[in-house]
Figure (cartoon, helix red, strand yellow):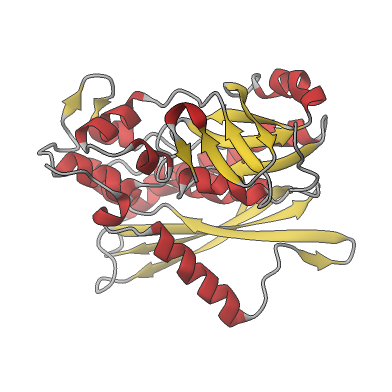
Length: 320
C-alpha cells in the first residue's frame, strides 16, 4: 500500500488556508477582539470534526463534548482571553435521547474543567444532511492579556503534553486503520482498543495557562490543532521557531505513521505529535513557568526563538 497523506485522505490544508483567506478578504474585515466599554471580548467557534464518526462506531458519546469544549476554550487562550461562557449546537440525523444525554455529560465535564458556564444551545434534526450527529460550539471570553506580543530572539518555547490525537487529523487517522483492514473495535499492542484510543478526549489547558499568565509575561500561545506546526508560527510571522527537543509522540502517532507509511513532515503538519499547546516566555521566566505548568500537565522546554521565519525541527529535518 502506498504512502498516506492528509490531502489524499480528503483534507487539503493548503486549500483550506486559501479558502479561509478568501472568506476574510470577501468580508473585508476581521477583528480578533470586540471592545465593549472597558472590556475586550473574543468569540471562538469550532466543532469536533470526523472524530464523531469514531464515537458513533464505538457507541461512546460521553467524552465528545469535552472535545468540543476544549477546541473552543483553548483557542480563546491563544488570544489572551479567559473563557467565560459557551453555547452548543447539536445536529442529529434523528433525535436520540440516549446519545444526547451522553453528549451532554461530556459538555458538562468540559465546562467544569474549563471553568465556564453553558448558557444555551440549539438542536436540529437534519436527516438529509447529517449521518449520525455533528457537534459544534461557541465560546465567549474576556481578554486579560495582550497576546501575542514582544516575541524576540532568545525567548524560550515551552511545550505542554497533549492527551493524544485531540480533535484533528481524523480523516487521515481513520483511513490509515480502516484501509489496512482494521476495525475500530480491534485491539493493537501499545494502544489497546483502537476506537477508545482515538476517542481519548482533548486536553483542556485553561487553569494552567491562566495561572501562568498571572505570574509571568506570556508572550505567545499556540494551540496545536489542525495543521500541526503551522499553528506555532501564527504567534509571530517574522521569527524562527526552532524546536530543538520535540516532545515524544504517544504510541498512537507512531502506529499511524508506520501503518500508513506517512512521512515525518506530513505527521507534524497534520497532528499535534504529543504537544497540544506551546507558550513563549522570556528565558528568565522558564523555571517559574515550568513549576506552574507541571502542577497540571507534563511541560518542558522544547525550543527557542531565532532570527528568520517559520518553524523547524532540525533533528527531523523539518522546516515549515
